[in-house]
Length: 314
Image (cartoon, rainbow, N blue to C red):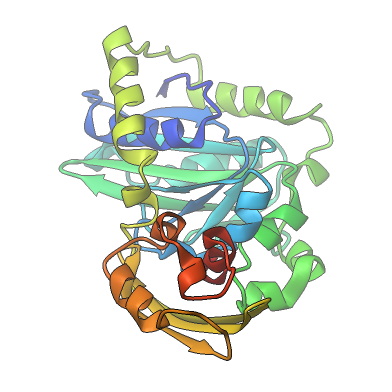
């Protein structure tokens, strides 16, 4: 199978690379490419970012959040996770995941497909995949966990109150598998990637993207995938509640977000303030939570800085 080379580890650009390969690459046969991301959580096309991940943990640990163009659930990537993408005409893309399964079996990994979109080894998940159709073309892309940081994976994907948060790191560790534990013949992820590349390519040739095509990918990354509107504003609405004690008193919030902006917002609690908090709530409807950074919140909550109040929404 012909292949592309993608050496970027920028998750925003890599999502753009996928979309460009699907929609902008006019090739009459399937092509594949392997790629990696620096630490990032990749959420599905239809997911709500606030409801699926611990955004505070991501922010504190320099983990990016990016929305992909395919459905499914949120996944954690780091440089010890190898991703694959296969793109081609629909009539030639009957069993993309089967190609990966066959290659892994050839490498000595006792892998099998289970559930909707998983690859497992000895009952433990090592890979998930998703797909997208565009006109008469299809893209299938997925993960291959080589030596992923399970603690960071668990904490990043554990939104407050979620089942994943309750299960904890050890529980997750028992249900997922890093491939390095099953393929000791490879000296690291680069060695593994080279072997997989050779099996999938089978002496076929590389397709070299022109400078203008690379520029188009860069533009797509900047104009779409790096934007707040795509990553946070694209998802469905969700309702939340939270409370926290501050020097001005306890503040409780109940709010709903739709497409990443406040659809409803109500403040409660025993806090002190010179101006009614409902005035602030009304002002924020239709705005992103980050709009708080432009408000003098101390009028509504004695002495409270905007960034402190914003922690109630993260």
